[in-house]
Image (cartoon, protein in one colour):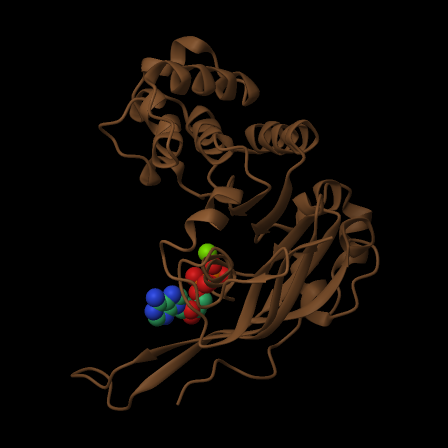
Length: 282
Ligand SMILES: Nc1ncnc2c1ncn2[C@@H]1O[C@H](COP(=O)(O)OP(=O)(O)O)[C@@H](O)[C@H]1O
Ligand SMILES: [Mg+2]
């Protein structure tokens, strides 16, 4: 069953004419983009910085409205829903951010951070909230003693675990991760990917996993969509993407992934790809 569907999404940001800009300009951040996600699927979304990945995430989450196109959750079209109408879907669709620390209220303890969505969705009893927070902490590999800590008292990896705990507190169906582990080192990144994989099986989650790093997608994603200048230029299954990328842009992205074996490295570097068109700047 289709969990999430986007049809011909467009998002243009207008820039007014001002002191420093002689002409009014617009940026076409998401350009006629369609995608769909099956229940239980992990969809990787890769592309270089500025290609519109975060804009797409905000459109899918209903945090921004598209200029045109539709977004659907379980065949329910929520494109024009108001913020309060979106509550029902937001419970099912959560987000993990790149920089968890920046997304936390620094005056909240771990218990309050993870408990906040529970409180927002009607869990009034402090005891019941605490029990769910403790269960959720265990799921993400943190200990009970972390419950009274403030975010700045945690390591980068632990902060990211709290970010994941907050996202799964309401036991959602889908999590959109926007470059969640870009700031972590390689070992921690691997631990976090393993954690997401475990949670997927334990809680029956689906993921949209946004990254600029193609090296993580083959192991983790069922399918991978490559985004370039607001469009999806290629979509393949995660395993085949690394072996048989078709689009020259994907090949260029792949050639920027570090390879340990120098013989393979030589083979991988093909011709560089140049964009044929630039952003829609008027
Ligand atoms: N609120 C906004 N107003 C104007 N332009 C924006 C806004 N948000 C994003 N953009 C532009 O849209 C393009 C895509 O940005 P973004 O979605 O953040 O890319 P990515 O997440 O892939 O790095 C960029 O050119 C960016 O400058
Ligand atoms: Mg981004």
